[in-house]
Structure formats: structure tokens, C-alpha cells
Image (spheres, helix red, strand yellow):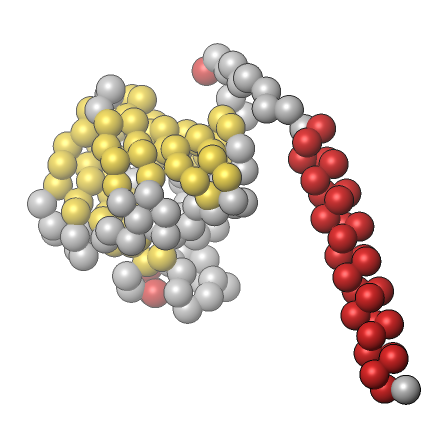
Length: 167
């Protein structure tokens, strides 16, 4: 009797999983990729996520940075804005749109800085330690594969006090 009940349970679970898989496949096959065209005036700026210092603003251009998949966003920082030493799980590509973006490669804000001005490009492998600061109001475009995250080297640097120990 136990074997029959177990067999029935497995059959029901398998059927339910197959039905969900078929439904997901149907949804994904009917979703077509669309072109995205935005002018600067079309951007919808909002506060940066709570894991970033206050004062930063983000506009998502494409995708959802919090989910798997490609994304593009713009990050606007006021003069003097600093992001303490940290790393990201995934690779990122960064283009400076305006201002000057100071990128410190290493474990401290005292590490040698690369001064990246409007038009500059930087590719950063995942898990590479770095810190950043803005000279003048600065806008950078960040592209990569999500989920996009940030892990501070010093947990106390995370402005989001409710964040987990690894962020």
C-alpha cells in the first residue's frame, strides 16, 4: 500500500511539473524580444537601491538587474559620491556618460585610481575588488548579466543595515 501511495504521489508531482514546464515554455515562446529606444528625456530616475550610499539615482534602460538575464542601467551620482570597496558576482561593463568616475582597483579607497572621463569605457571581471567616487555630477552606464549585486569588503560600509552578512 505504501509503494502504491508513493507511486501515485510521484506520478502526480511529475504531471504537475510537466504541466508547469509546458506552460512556462508556451509563455517564453510567445514572448518576443523587442527593440528598446530611449532618449535622455525618457529616462525614469529613482533612488539607488538601499545597498548603495544615499544620493545616487538609477534609471533602468533594459532588462531587470535583479533577475537573471542581460540588463543596462544608468547610475547618477552627485559630486563627491563614494562607493566603498566592494565586488560584484558577475562581470560588468561600464561607460562614463558625463562627469569623471574615479575607479580605485583594490581593497581600499586609497588604492591607485583610474580617472575615467565622459566617453571612457571599463570592463570589470566579477569578484574583482574595487571602489568608486564621482568628481562633479557623474553618470555611468552599467551593462551586464543579472542579478546585479554588491558585496562590501567591510560589512559596516553597507548603508543597508538590514542586508545579509555577505552584502
